[in-house]
Image (cartoon, rainbow, N blue to C red; front, side, top):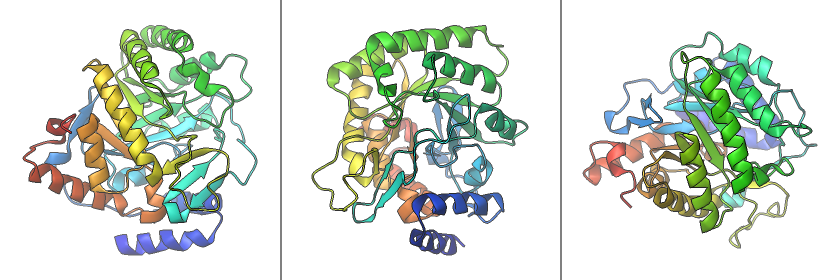
Length: 349
């Protein structure tokens, strides 16, 4: 069945990328997604921010923007699923076309602009959900007069519904959003987030993560790390898409505006991940994202300092069965190097 699903995924390449994605969501909601089956390999179990993960390979946000198919994606084999990005109010995002496949580069460019159905629809779908680790990636509306207030609103509205929250200040497709990564702005943002968190009920308490861009200098990595640790956040996700365009790109679509993800992001995001690992000095955990398409890629992230990893763009080319193949390969690599668990390999590279 996995082969059939992967063939179907490749057939979707005949469609516009955004239309293909919507059709995929509809198929998953209809129960047509892959089923991993079988017990998880114990070597892949992990922990981030106090959350026990059945395996350390997660689905990155952007795939399930509106919390419609987190159940089917958990069933497909992901150890955790991050839904979103969700903003307080529904918004259409940027004009289409805004999603581009760079097939010769195994990459994607997007300038979606936080298109989503808003917090109320998102919360309704999370209410009464079944087992499995599901996170909420929260953002700010494009035209908001108080962007920090939007993050606080997202946290308050979804409290008790998500297993963790990710503060997304690193999308390149909402003008001015990445300015929140500067030290002063980040201190203000995370200070208000921490204040709101501490005022919420202790029941349903969930860890809070921060998602950063890969386009950072060493000094910025150290400053962000200090602010994250001071605010008591549990993890940093490294990284979002990049505005850079590697010279290796061959696709005629490489010049499209937006964030680049997929294979060309692997080296840059892993380099920045390693810098965060050094700067964090054990004060918070790291999740590695960007360019993961194989077990070797996931293993490189873990050895660079990640306690868990996330992927999305590679499924555009590898199909939904990719997660099972990555997990199998990762488990083999961990055991071959004498590790009894993924946790033992964190920062070993």
